Image (cartoon, rainbow, N blue to C red):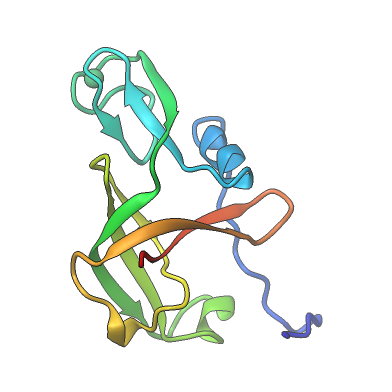
Length: 141
Ligand SMILES: [Zn+2]
């Protein structure tokens, strides 16, 4: 248990915009959604106002499987924002979703020295505030 005191640095929260709001709302319900183009059927992440493949503005949000593989990672060391500095070294990973797009995230439970390129992952949801639930990943199997 971590005691929250006035001296404890608060975790920086992502900014939720009209463009990204469907992603965050779905995450609160433990669902992973990304955009898919209604014209060419390509998935994309992060969200954009138009399809990055064909330029069509006709894009919708779709729930995806949550299955992914570990594409790459790095380990951040100080200097960092105070919240992260207290928890450093802090791994940051890039995962490749089964549907194609890559996403920057974190991996729960598995220590960084056990990461392997291409390892199978599945989405996991971590509520960090009333408004924000992060999409994380855990090793599958
Ligand atoms: Zn398209």
